[in-house]
Amino acid sequence: MTLAATLPTRKDESFRYANFDALAGVWPIAREDIVVAAGQEDSRQIVELGEGAVARHLAIRVEKGAKLDLRILTAGPAYGRIAVDVELAEGADFLLGAAQLATGSETLEIVTEVTHCEQNATSMQVIRSALAGHSTGTYLGRIAVARGADGTDAEQSVRAMLIDRTATANARPELEIYADDVKAAHGCAVGELDAQGLFYLASRGLTPPQAKRLMLQAFVAEAFTGAPDEEALSEAALARLEAIL
Amino acid sequence: MLKIDNLQATVADKPILKGLSLEINPGEIHAIMGPNGAGKSTLGYTLGGRPGYEVTGGSVTFDGQDLFELEPHERAAAGLFLGFQYPVEIPGVSFVQFLREAANAQRKGRGEEPLSGGEFLKLAKEKAGLLRLDMDMLKRPVNVGFSGGEKKRAEMVQMGILDPKLAILDETDSGLDIDALRVCGEGINAIMRAPDKAVLLITHYQRLLDYVKPDFVHVLANGRIVKSGGPELAHQLEAEGYEAVAA
Image (spheres, chains in turn cyan, purple):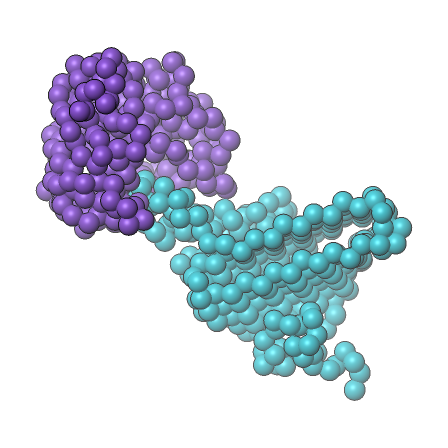
């Protein structure tokens, strides 16, 4: 049996919050390779709206001076795991905007490892999770900056909104830096919808579900700002939000 | 229209309103003045239904209906508008989007047809013009990046669009420069001066009352109305101070 075919356990850090029963059903995970050739610009969308368990593993290489715009919307699967490994060559640019929306008892996770292999690459990750019921949303994000990869600019913005207090959010941004001249920023917050904002909207006549939907819509939209297919992504997210509320 | 009888309310278990009574009839403009901590804002929030403001006694009827039986959005649909002293910023949600939805939610609550996009924009443009607020500001996220004066004018634009029966305006004059004060005052008159409408102005200062002439002025101190009178009372307060007048 090869290593790749062995079902991970909770001891594997990147599977720590996985749903192993569901994972067993989709194991092993086929690796999807994506290469963006030097100087090219590409965009991809991963949209998982079905109810069945899904686990994907993208292995991405963005070559010198190339750009990739990747958007992820996971809203529906009982178990949804999207793992993204990215290697950035000199001057490459990677943007990830991801939203996970769940209600009930889903387990959703986004696991990223972004490696700045060479100089002057930039990466930006915007992760937004809106979680209701007894669902769990996880983001494990590692940024590695290789020796000599000076001029790196890496940023993670991770926010989770708990619509119900019974939902769970896990967030673990990680930095591993072996270069000197590096700009790395991460922000991470788990919270609830602003009660003052909800009251303000209600005082103008919006019902509580309408007020929540408007605020969540704006929250989730941050993951899709500037996407080539921003409107379609936002509409799909909105449909799910309406089902959640 | 609004009948407040012996209202008592607490915030975080602390009694703030301690037996406040006030009756407002259609066509009337009332001003409530009072020192800091008297309970002015608590009155506004309690009538608006803000969570955390707990009614512990007394009653309030609005057009004969028990106000406290209604949720905040139902109060709005019934025709109550609360102008905030500190309008809340809501990132990512545009005024136009939210106000159209709010206006239509209210209309639905009253069993009326929704406004189309075109009808709504026309209405919004008219009211923004009245308050001299650039229409482009209404395409921006709610109150985000607005100056103090712009926020207050935007409150009045919302009032114009939602067309309430009763407006409770909490320190609409605070943070306004002289010109903006006049624009807001004129806006309040244009929108709310009508035989079937009424206004409760909550303010510290007499200056707004130069533009919006009240029919009645009340002094609120320590959770109760301690003195009521006509417009002359506001001048007396301004000249002599709360302590002298309310004593």
